[in-house]
Image (cartoon, rainbow, N blue to C red; front, side):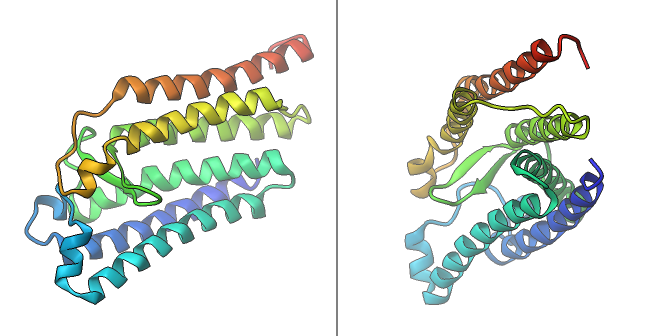
Length: 227
């Protein structure tokens, strides 16, 4: 738990860097749109027509997103003294980074106008799109789970997940990702997002949340009391 404040501060600062880059990109490619961005996004064909530099910039954006993941993973590894703590710090860093990314954008360019505003979340390997509320829900859950893991670690009573637990957690997470990506063809073709599949999103979210709760309940049975 001692390193959590430093990880949180790092994530807040990193979110500012991320939001600043996005502000620059929006000013460059969506200068006339409200808040600097709204759908439809530019298609690959449109970027090709605009010239090689714009296609190259798209490749740079892919690399930047991969670097973002690497940085979030490595801060978790650096902060954790074992795998559980590394995962916990990664979840905390990811959740805080994502939440403050939107807070910084709101401060910098007054965007998004609301929690149900659509956003382009990620480009790898396909475009991820969803109302802002969806990734914020995931981020809050990640922070809660990460802090919970660290809580048990600090008391020398670690939460141990079996391969079955990991299967449930990963299955739920992948389902959430599918809910973000299922409209990718429409988005890549320059369309506006279809209604978000909240049912699929919450199905995946509850599967992962349920898997984590089961790990907590097992820990309670092993210790014979509530901590």
